[in-house]
Amino acid sequence: MVQDYDHHKTLYQPEVIDSRLIRRDGNDFHIHLRLLKKKVITVVLDTWHDVHYSQLSRTRWNLRSRTSRIQEVEHAGTPKETVLPPDTGHGFLWRLNSYWKFEERDGGTWLECRAISLTRDIPKGLAWIIDPIVRKLPRESLIHTLDATRKSLAPLPQPVGS
Image (tube, rainbow, N blue to C red):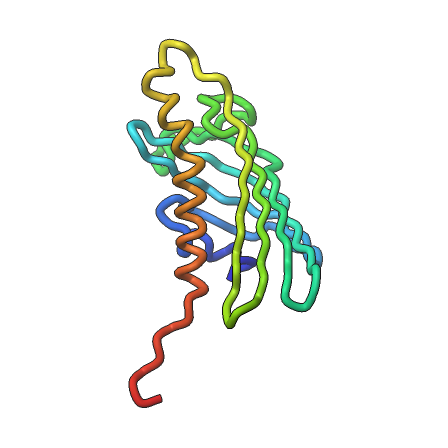
């Protein structure tokens, strides 16, 4: 499920509005995600990630994901859509690294995810509105990602009498 990148747009909506596997080489994946963040303002980002999976044992895996490029998208989904050059725009997200641990035990799968995000300095005139958003978004995104993953991996209820 986690490696099914073409379906992340369904599993992790509304934050992931498009997703696709670009290339796979064994345990290495290069993927694209279009991310949507809505608070007081709406931000759309095209992000490319290099993802590597490491098997530690029969029941334990690690995943490392690093963005290789992030581009802000203005007027996304409209005829005026413009993808800005990398490292330009408002700077809500410059880089994102995620580190996952998966372990099968106690009749289920245990997940841990840590994420490190980098944003640009906020202009003083906008700090009063943007600073609270930038400080809350990473935590909210991480909670949403873990919750959506848990729901996707949860066993389906069995019909009565089976």
